[in-house]
Length: 368
Image 1: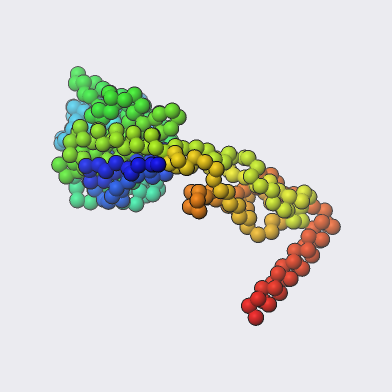
Image 2: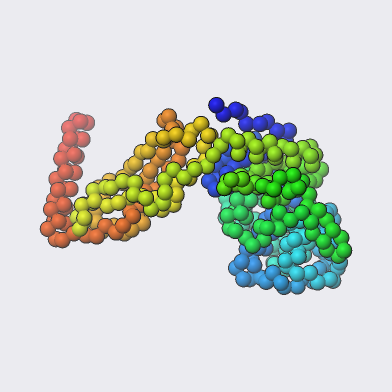
């Protein structure tokens, strides 16, 4: 029997499986709250995408503006007029949580922080972060600067799934710049080697926030906590969430991509049937007591007629457990359904016509 999920002393939280996106447990996960320095995950994400798209070079030198230098809050301790590489600025954003580094990076990418914030919001919309709106690159409090636990989990999943060359920075414990060695504020990096990110945040309005990712035995979970009461609390509450998810839930592939799941009759075709399966693996995150035989239901979209190109969606596959639908995936043709000769096409056309006419007559009789 699966116990109830832990109740935390925070304003909002969520725990998801990174591979499937399945929500294991959540509370107030769509509530709009100040994200504090969790904002910098988007700042780094947008910047790393610019590098990946070759619109920016990681080795490019950035001149620190007075505007960036004057930014308050946590700092990388940049000097105005000094030159810093893009890579070092990313380290300063992710490890030091430097507001000065965030503004310097934003200005380099887009010319001004305001234009960069537009890029951040556009990216949030593309990712489906419906309860997020940014006003700056740092996370400093502003009335219309907000996000949600679910949206930050979505962003974390995107950061991880894109396999950015810069994801490794989230696991680094220290960064030294200008003779000042600063420690990553994510205490989990010291406590448990399975944690490799991601970001802490804190303001008086936001409380203590933490987005974390842990990889154990081939599985990865992502947790988000908004509004804990202290650094120690957000750390301990994250450990509770992760412990629950790894102990009581599992992620398995139930149907393989390319595996023939069924054969369906093919009308007007060179062959009389066509193989159907999935384009991608069907992987589900379920409570461990549900790792048993599941009911498979297959629906085909009407009579299938040649020609059919390989990869065409022809129906859907659904998995059920005790009447509860667990997941659905499109069924595709695993091969080309080539047309038959003229006799086959003529015969099947006639057969389908008369079959549909008779079925229509029966339907009319039933409703008469």
